[in-house]
Image (cartoon, rainbow, N blue to C red; front, side, top):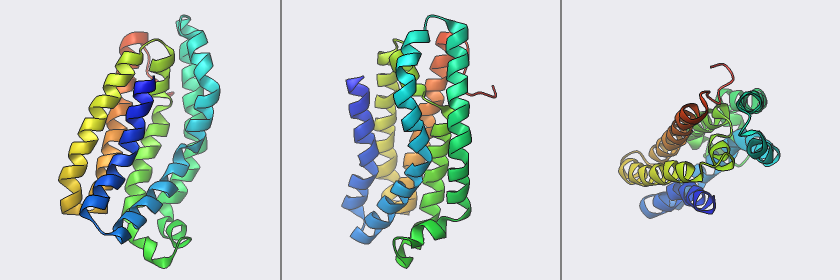
Length: 197
């Protein structure tokens, strides 16, 4: 779990570090602001994870209760995150203008990052479910692969597409590790974290 958290922390800074190397301070500032605003989508996910993690560990041996609790928490995360996601996608200029008119250049970045982060919220607590259910190694491997892919994508996309490239790399790897973790959950427990599937 320590390894997973360390990799996640590194992955969350990769885009900024590579942007700093290839692009201007203005680009980094716009991207970082859009990233912080997009992160509003995951506030509920983080809050619920804090409460739900011990319960995942407690229920992991009772498949029916475990499945019900996972789907309930994911549904709650989706219902509370969706209005935030919708507001960010429909009114990106409004949120960016709070920091100054020049930040509206990050409109598309905000939309892409919000989509990636909402998919993470839509998937629920995938990595934490694996960690608390005794599959820490699987969670670690998923995040390690995603971190390597994130690094590669950022190096390829940022020089060509700038802050849009960084947003695509970040959103794509967020979607990838959530999908991969959901597949592992399905293989281990015969259900997905998605409440509608």
